[in-house]
Length: 376
Image 1 (cartoon, rainbow, N blue to C red):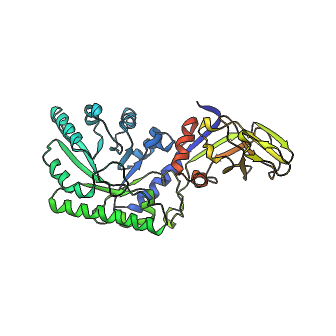
Image 2 (cartoon, helix red, strand yellow; image 1 turned 120 degrees about the horizontal axis):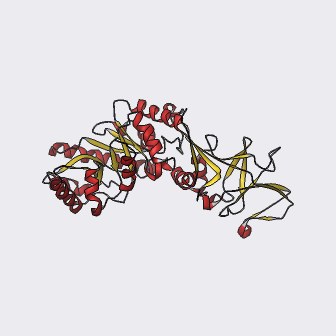
Image 3 (cartoon, helix red, strand yellow; image 1 turned 90 degrees about the vertical axis):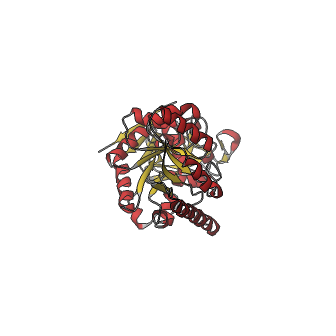
């Protein structure tokens, strides 16, 4: 369902600025892979990829083949890495689309090799190593035997190798130690592959948090590409370093006040009686709810901006309506604009309130509202 009342304004000019800042930071140290999975974090996968292509971004990162196909159909010719799992039924299309495929299974590798041989070409792969994420990937102790098997598959182009940092965003000392161990483990693997004579051309592990918190560890030695998503869209939950201060959020979501009511003390607001007025309160009703992608966990735990001031969400967010307390804001009228997400109220702040990543907020809310693109 798309609501016309609530709009998402995507600032492609700011997006371009964010990309340039990161390009300048990594300079000649590493290539940049721009993560556009999840419909470009809700911003529109084609629109943000077009900006990236114009700026010469080296790679685009998606989660599944459907996203890659969408980009190819939109004349996006930038190299694409499918970071999530791929499936045997898509092998022929995968190879013909000239996309890079995450690889961590020898049977799938053999199937790719066989199909590529039949097509008189090579399948492009990036081998995934599990250094501690606990999802897909080859365990470190099996890496070298895996590569020995890959060496026998002549129709594979092993272009890259990568791993995922699972807690690079954390400032907890134990998590920091864990991240450093992940980095060290991966670098040892790369060193060993170099000795074997089969080190892939592209080696990457850095997400946004790793780039910010562990630079230059993630761009030195054998490491020569970074995978950046949230930071490019302007959302990062920890303190940004000096070089990243001009990186700003690229999405603003606005709605309008649909109704205003005044309640005396001891009145309940919303389903389940989760909020009761402790004094006379003026409440604004917004025409948006969890059915439009607004996370219900923000009930009594989040807020919006009206006339430049913060208005807390009160009561349980409904499917199509949300109530906010405007008692301390003067001259509020029905029809006034309300900021749900903006540079002054970033998704990262909303995400912190409920213990999720900002990408969770963005990918839930932005695709369900009308998106308007600002390109000048």
